[in-house]
Length: 140
Image (cartoon, rainbow, N blue to C red; front, side):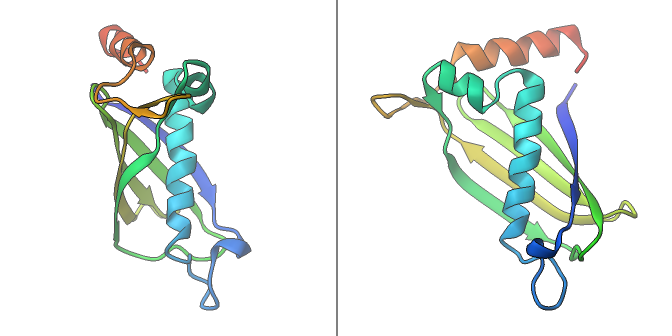
């Protein structure tokens, strides 16, 4: 079973360049929307991270642009959790309003304990317990 979430994104005027295609850096914003939706659905979003004294900075970001999104389109961003024990690793697929693959991406985030800002090489139990409970139930 995979833990995935889908988020709808509308391409707004402020997302595009003078050619009315999404400016390349704005895809990162779309990934963040999907990542937040996925983590909230798991029950360990940014508010829960903060409450348990962790932050998860992005340490790697890889993007493959396949096609362009254009002004006015609605896109679907699928985020799939692929690693959660030692770091958070999420794979993304962005589809246009016709279902064509537009972008593939992946992010990695490392746990950092606050306030001491100590890098952790395992994820906190608050996250791993939630993920394992979802996997055991077999429903998400």
